[in-house]
Image (tube, rainbow, N blue to C red; front, side, top):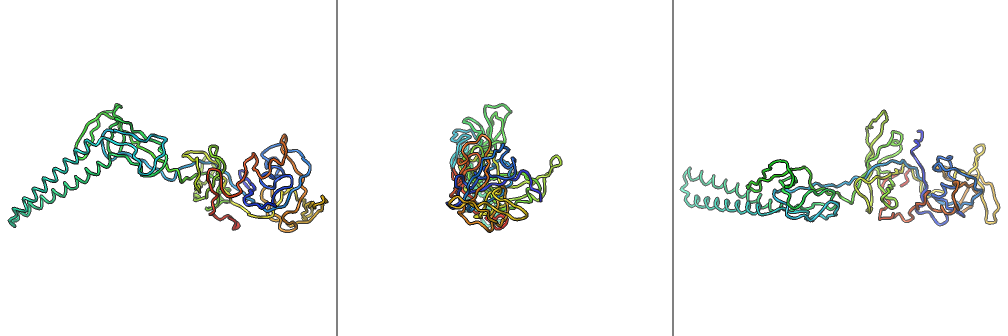
Length: 421
C-alpha cells in the first residue's frame, strides 16, 4: 500500500540503555535531524549542508511510525441540572468556571411556598385519617358502610402520596451537583423565579408564567429558558479525528496514541477505541471517524481544547538500529564503517532488517556499543549538533521513565502490529 504523505516516523528513547548514546551526538530523536534520510522533506524542509563525519555508538532503539491527525477534547461525562421545584432563587453559591464536587449545593430557592404546601397536605391527610377512623367505628357491616370506608381509605392513600411529593419538593429547593467537574454554565441569579425543570429571570419580559408547587399556584412575570447548570467532568476525555482510507488501513483498535496541545506541557497518551466502518464523503473525499480515549490523569485538559494525535501503528522496541545513511549498499551487499578505539576504520558487511523512517534495524554484523563513522548533515544556520542529544527536533525531550509532565502516564495496554506493545 503506498504511504500517505501525512504519516511520519520518529525514534523514541524510552528505556534506552546507557550504551545507546552517541559519541558526540545522541542516537535518538536528535539523530533524525542529523542523519535523517528521505531528503529535505524528512528534515522539515530545512536546507541541509555537509558537516563532515560524526561518530555514533550503536545501541538499542525504539522505532515507531505514526498517523497524525487533529481533533478537540470532549469530556466523557457531562451533566445538565435544573430545579425540580418552583420558586424564587434566594441564594447562589457557584458560578460558571467554578469546580464542584459531588453533593455541593449550587443554588437554593425560597421554601416558604413549599413549606406551606407540605403543611396543607399534612393537614388534609390528618383530616382524612380522622374521617376513616370515624367510619370504621360506625361500621355496621352494611354494604353502604363498607363503600364509605373503602372511599375513605382511597382518599387517605391519595393524600399520603401528596405529602410525600411535598416533602420531596422541599428537598428540591436545593440544586445539588450530582457529579464532580467544571461548571461551564450557571444561569441562576438571586431574585430569579424558576419553574420546575427550567430556569427563568424575574427581571426579563416575556409574559406571565403560572407555576405550581405542591398544590399552590403562583404567578410571576418571567421568561423561561431551556438552559440550566452544566457540569463537565475533568477526569475522562475523548478525541474524534478523521482519517483517510489509506491511513485507516494502517491502524487498529488498541493502538497507542500520543497527544500534544498548545495549552498542555509535554505529551499525554491514549488508545484508539473505535474506528468507523463506513466513511463520510465530503467534496468527493472519503474519511473515516476514529475515536481516541485519553489515558491516565492529565492536568490542564479542558473541553474543546485542540490537540494533535499521533496514532502509533508500528513500533519496534529494543532493536539494534542505526541511521540509514550510515549504510552503503552495492550490488545487494550492505556495509558500514566501524571505528575502533584507536580510531582505525573498517568496512564491515551487515545484515539489515526493516527500515523505519531514517533508521534501519541491524540483524547481524554489529554489536551494541560499537562505533560507526557516519557522514553527518546539519540544518543551515544551526549551531553545535551535540545540542540535539536525546531530544526531539525543536527541543522537546522524550520521557525516560514512562511519566509525562503534568502527571500524564504512558498507556500500557494495546497491542501493536508485529506483537510489539
